Length: 153
Image (cartoon, rainbow, N blue to C red; front, side, top):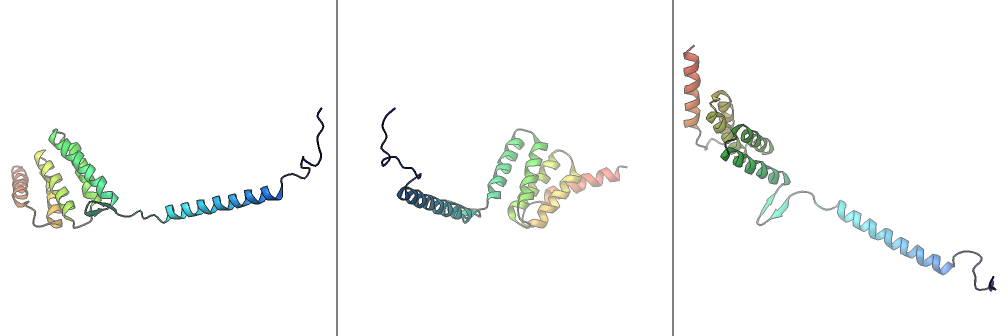
């Protein structure tokens, strides 16, 4: 066993100086965390800036659905494309041009499938949203088909 000097080995625990340093560092760390969480909590979650336009996060998702719908449509998967454009329509504000265009696309796709009853619903929705869209020829064509089916009974 070695001889230990009782004056060198603390008998009461940690020194007051060391306690003070630990307490100060703890307080500084706590303040830093509070500042970080406050900054994160106050971070705006609204529109994000892309180029010169400000777009809502839903618009990114809407663009994604539109892109997928266009690809499905070009691949001949009309029913799946309809589902994508209906999602675009649901995400847009009432009366917006994008909503009208989505409804026009859905109506046109239903007309391509020969489902004029469903096509007319979507074409009329598009017409109500934006009367400037060139819908009348397709509406007239669907109405004529429906009338010929009903008159043939």
